[in-house]
Image 1 (cartoon, helix red, strand yellow):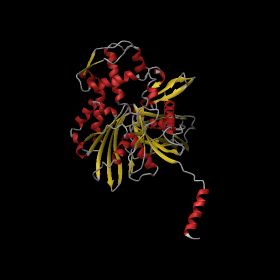
Image 2: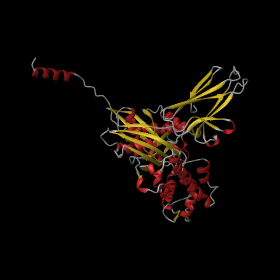
Image 3: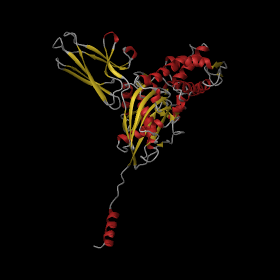
Image 4: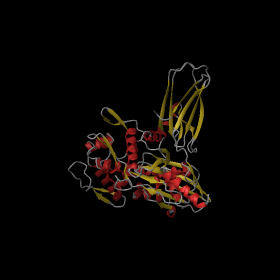
Length: 513
């Protein structure tokens, strides 16, 4: 058969074959922020990341607000939820991220108690529906990565992962928000030396992360090692808003008002208009000597016109600024690194745009030529998308080595904290310790697992109380218990107890179930 005949035969065969198109797989990074949520898509090593705009949202970033509408038995998120806050204050949550991991009932729905985890699950379930509006039938979501604060405790990380289950959203894992920022920064080829020490300050609406990195560049491969982490899941721009509102109410003798009860006793969200007014006032008071309350209605139908001085504002937020200052000074001291060895300080997060915060950073680090204020709302979601590509093997440009932000251990006598896994171990990690049991007659004992970096347990976070009961009396007087703790790459753990000579063994997830 000559060449022309062969080509004709091949064409005839191809015409008869039904060509099946494989779905195009897509990778996304999700930044679930306290104020706004952003989503970015991995487009390839040689293309910039794409920030996603959903049809139901006004902008690419959309409010992280979630609201349950009792009349319609329906949950809504984003701009629609933001518009429902004032009408449904008891079932609206403008900063649910701050409450992740709380074992409380938000409200009751048809005799069912709605928890923080259930509300969070509904947020991601609706977000999954948003995705369906931007991908075609020939496409599918291959995987996503969700960003969380580095300073999230183990139980908060576990809550996020648990909420993501059964939403239909394929999730490969979590990434720490500063890790995402450094990935996005490196992706833009901004590393100019073979080795650089980079400090990241990330302060959003709910949390503060300060992370120190060593970045090594070998040809086109970049290795990112986290050296130290400090911060708090309870310091953010929203805290300044609440401090401001609390002091304003106190100043005007409104501690018995309905607004005080709603916000500071019942922990309800600050309504949209009031929240926006507080943010505007906060920014103005950072730069102006005095500002009036023209746009703030503390009592329905009544506007207060008294002014607030800048020195009052600075005095009110001083405790928050003091804590931030301590973290900024200690981040380098813990690893014996001098300021001179820092090549670049990257500052990101909406709250770092507040002049009072910006001035504090520049005061602690006076060489301002090293400071780069990124002011990019999408860096975290972009970095999360890059991490999704790393986990899926779509890129080989980066190696990321996160660490455990807190020690994990047990309570000893007199409230002393004894760590089993130390702070700063590279994830995943695990360790164990043996403790002597002093009696053979006890058939029960309590074990308290804490996470934190203080020597006294009261200053750390209780993440798991263990009640061991119904045990047989120990076989030997010198018996001992071995406590194993393991953390996976997401910082989520498992606990195993072995009472050796009595041959008792017990394993469970570290977080409460």
